Length: 256
Image (cartoon, rainbow, N blue to C red):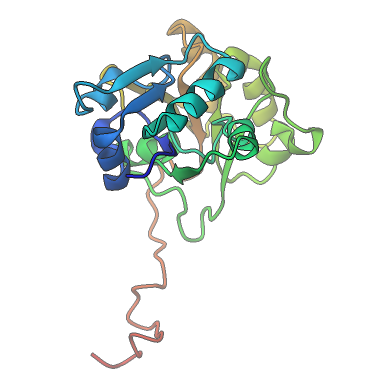
């Protein structure tokens, strides 16, 4: 591998959900900087014994980026390991900006997001024909980042789509109130705690109980909420994709 920074999405926590590419790079890297508060130790179980492991949970951007730049300039292969998938709330934009300004090459390696792992655990398809065909991934405003007014949770809830709510456990009462403006109180919600970790837990509750169940279980972080008409629903609706009357480029109707 070339000396550069590989920014890798570690997935939700299960090492078997790493992509093959992510696993290969992790197992060969010289240096690994990882968000230790969000990435469980089992993700690092097959790294090189002599790899330098740097925890970043207590570091700022001003600490992290210079470390990556320094190690690459030493002709070393560096991994910056984030939880989940890089496209969701990973705060990589500012890291890439500084790496570009320093002339340091980098490559992004995507990962599985918690909503995908949770849906698999629930044996659920979040886009069911004639019931729901849209997935919304969102969060609520917190100390670290504000959500634009145009993306207010209540306005998104108006679509009654499959809504995956990240980073909301500390604001669960406010979130529930906004969701109840548009979803029926008995809409099923999956409360997913530390999906992919060894101590993961999932509760299926009515929307009107989302806040109380979260508070009863002291959920304040590492929690994903999935609010969806598809949860707990049994429907006879089917996709046209594999219907015998549906023809397409590779299958003509009425022909074997």
